Image (cartoon, rainbow, N blue to C red; front, top):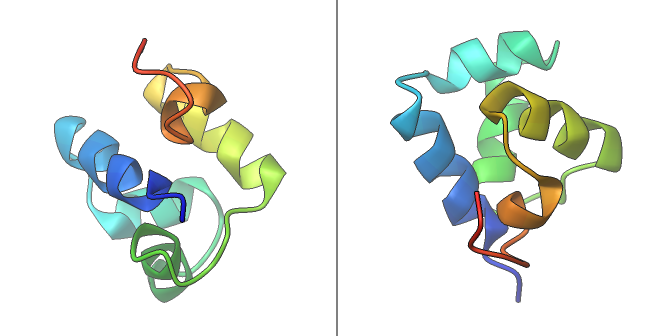
Length: 69
């Protein structure tokens, strides 16, 4: 099982953002974004790319395919 959702939370907290702020950036409601962080829903590719841009990192880092930020 992929645990990328933990990395999503860590990135958000490292950037001092709330779930609501990230959800607003992604143009969705906070409960929907919360499901991504909790691992209850897979993140669509387009949202993954937007998150990588927000955090200025790679999608591979978010997906835990690398530890290189």
